[in-house]
Structures are given as structure tokens and as C-alpha cells.
Image (tube, rainbow, N blue to C red; front, side):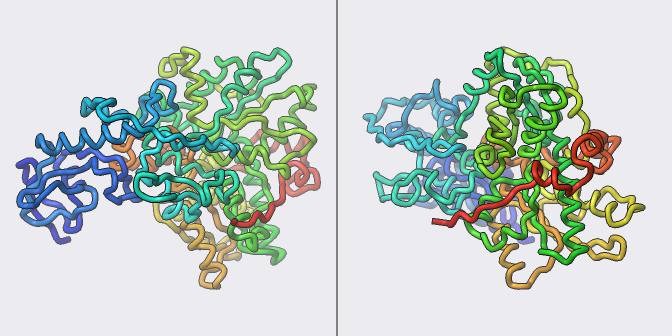
Length: 578
């Protein structure tokens, strides 16, 4: 590797050729502030917060876009540099809706952080706040352009990472703002609800549509039977909202905290992750043995499903008909559970805790209703749950660990790894391999794990060659689909997750600071927590779950029965992309 040598604030540093000044400074343990920059997502040098001096050059230089050069002398904290950054921040604040105390991003806002660090005068320039109508028509995302700083990070992740491009800059110059074509509501666009724009936004211009008040009302209603259940990845991320290290498994504290909110029952969604695997593996085996439509795509990610409905309706027959674990659990609670415990399903208030804003859309899908009412009443993001816990004064870090309620308290490691990219496919392979070969012993398929954008593997099971692929991020999904359509690739099963890295990086997960997003492999740390959990489980293959066995014995008989299809399977709807 070619290396270059330069100095930053008089400190010699040697970095690979091609590094930017920003990267070189980080190598020298010097952090240059940024606002529009986001690693692997956005690098356009537009905010001008990262300006530095380079000896011998006129004017200041944007560190995030200018390559470091051999012999370069960089100064990052001169009076000229600091004055420039301070003025830039003050100009941004002059057109910013400064309602910080009531802002969803208070204390988690990059602009607020910079304003404090540079001791700015927010009233230095006359306030010329534009007035934009808040777009809250979608069931999952609220867009408030009065808080937008035009960093274009949301635009970049939507276009370059997710290949959806439903938002972009409108008008030019001083009047530029981010919006959907013709300034329509996001709800009138082919947005897939992944929420990656939210976790990429440095301020409070984008946030999930909150259902917290609805949940508090239900908890206060003596006629409501309130049931919570938590998705597999939440145990690995919720702790970050309480200043715990990234990747801390807080399952026991999470259960304890939710119970203290006043719920009637708190269950483990890993159970329906296991159930999804039984139904999905059975469907895969049937498709392989009966030479039906292949490859079969996973269907548990609502962002991916909506993407396929909008952009690849011809691929809908390839999607597994299985509902997601969230939807399966709601259907079971308002049928099997309600019948078994003599509870009026219409008085049940079912709340899922999920890593994803797309799940808020999923609970509104009419085709997922098993009766005349919604199976899931509210989907809360990890962030919403954290806000509820904080507002009650619960000392989360000091809570004793508690267990989920029976009968849906036990699950396998296969259910837990749903939260990481490749986890659904690996769990499905564990069970499908046993269905094809009753003596199959392997439980780890590590080839489908990892950070690679598209991962492929091939396995021999009972004389059958099973070729699989895994991808996350919808831009990568688009590439994979095009390979399949062209005949360049041939698989039996494909896992797609809308969010890069899977649910551990979902649009509803705790907001990360730019320092973490740019310099910490947070996705690997979160995933590691799930795989460690799996390794320590007594049962690791979904077909071993005693709870799944119980519900088949009591209610469904076996995977793929008529009753199972009525409650656990669904159909899809071509939606068009305009």
C-alpha cells in the first residue's frame, strides 16, 4: 500500500494514499467536526463545518473531500478556522427552527452539539426561519423541513444506499429544500418505510411517527388487556439509549422495565421467529421437492416486501407467503391465546417493540388482518420504548433481570439471530436441513454471516444441492434481483433485509452520534451480541422450540396446514412506483 506523510497541527502522520484530510486527522487522533459528512453514505463538502487551513493555499479547505498529500501541513484549530466554523453554525441557526427543548433530537442533535462546542450566538444573524408544512401523513415517518439543514444525508442514503430516491433537493440556492417530487407527501410516494433517512439525519428534521400516547392510554384503560412482545434485535440495542456499551445484551432489564410500565403480559417475539422458520422451511422444502417457483425470498422484512411490491411486482410469486414474526404473533395472540385464556380479543391491545419504522406500516396492511380488527394495534420502535421507560423514572441500568411471561417465554438461538443480516437464512437452513435429512447435525452456517454486501453459499443436504444468497440494503437487493432475472445467478433461497446490516441497524434503532457512525463498527458489535446469545442457547434450531411444538400440538397440527395458512401466511399487492 502506498503511504504518504504529512503533518496535522505539527503532528507527523503517515496514511494510505487516497485518504482525505479528515481521515488523516482521525489517524492522528484529531477529530475535525462535520455535519453533512457520513461515512459510506454522504461526502459532498457542502456544510463547510470541516474547514481547515493548509499551508501554502489560499482560503480554507473542506477536510472531508480534499485528499491528503505528501508533505502537506494542515492546521485544524487556528483562530481563522474556528471563526469560520462558528460563523457557519450561526448562519445555519438563523434559518433553523430553534425549538430544542421540545425537539425529538434534544441532546442527540449534531447541530446542537456543535453549537455548544463553539459557544455560538444563536441570535447573531437575523432569524429568517422559513415555514414549511410538517408532513405527517405516512404511518411511519414525520418530515419537518423547518429543522432541516440541507446536509443531504437523507437524500444520499435513499438514493445511493437504498436505490429508492423518493426524496431529493427541490429548487435552488437559498430556497432549496428536501422533499418528494412536486412537494407531495412522502405517503404519496413509493417510499418503503425503511427509516434509514431518520438514522442518517443529524438533526430533528426526520423522525418516526410516535404511537407512545396510544400505548399510555391503553395502559390506563382498565378494560384493556395490554400485551407487549419484543423483537430479537432489541436486546442488543436498547441499552445504548441508557448509555450502555454498544452490543450489551439487556434482555432481562428490558423485560423488567416493560413490566414496570404496567403491562398485563410481556412475551418473547423470538418464539414467532422460530415459528416463521418452521413455516418458511416447510415452504422451501415443498418448493424444492415439487419444483415450484424458486428462488424463494424471505418475507419477514416489511421494507423489503414493500420495495418488491413497488419496484419488482413480477418477483412477488418468489416471496415466501409467511407473515413476519410481528404479524404472526399478533394473529396468535388474538386467536389461540385469547381462546385458551378466555380473553376477548377486541379488548386486547397488542404492542410489538421493533427495530423498524416499516413495521408501523405493516400493522396497517389489510391483508394481514386475520379477523375484522388489527392483529397488532401498535408497533413501537426501540427509541419509543426507551422514551417511555425514561419518562417513568425507571432506573434501567439498576434493574434486576426478569424473564418473559409464559407460555411464550422460551425460544431458540435460531429465533434470536433474526436480528442480524443472514440470521433468517441461517435459521431456515438449520431447520430445512433437518426436514430434508433427519440426521443432519450442523447448526452453524457461517458462510452466510458477515459484512459483505452480497454473500453466497452452497450446501449439500440429503443429496440435494441448496444454493443460497444473503443481502441487506435495498440497493444491493436490486443488484441481486437483476442478476437472478438475467440468469446470471441461480439460488433456492435468498434473504433480503432492507436495512444495511439487518434489523440491528433498523430505522427505529437508537440514534447514533456521528462519532460512532463514522468511526465505530457498531453493526458488528450489535450482531455479535445476538450470535453470542445464540451460541449460549441450549436449543439452537427452531424446530427444537418447546413453545413451537406446543402450539402445533394445540392448534396448527403441523407446518403448512389449512389453519396455519389462514393465520400465519399472507399475500402481496403490486403497488406501482409512481
